[in-house]
Image 1 (cartoon, rainbow, N blue to C red):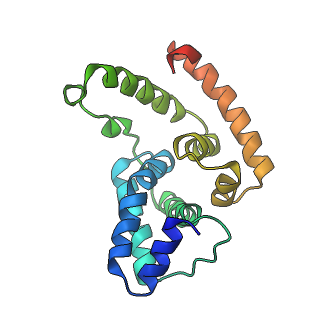
Image 2 (cartoon, rainbow, N blue to C red):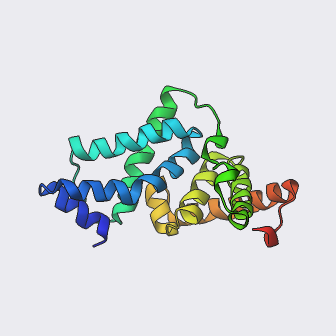
Length: 181
């Protein structure tokens, strides 16, 4: 059982500090993942809060069929797609960037490359963007990404393959090569 699952069970048993640990451990990654779907950092933060609020109010049962992270991301993904059905989001990737004066020079170059890659990923079709974000940015397995996306592992592998090919072409147009990444 992973730490997330253990902390969630502790929370269900009445340990409120376990919920704080869950929020601390998963909030930032979940917001970045949701930004990839919603394309708006403010809405992503709201949906992240909604996902944790759902854990507090509805206290859904965690069955352990997948990791806690996979289960939580699936809850958040469903909330995000419900939100997309309600309104069209505004694209504002610049909200995710850190001002350059706050970063050391060598970190700045890496951040600029990473930001360029993330901006380019934002240009991909939604399913390709989501699969790449889960597997490469969130470092999930293809199996976990498939569970979150509600697809088979083969389908997600195919989406990843096509997404990486599209991303490579887009990066080439941006003047970014494999050596730059």
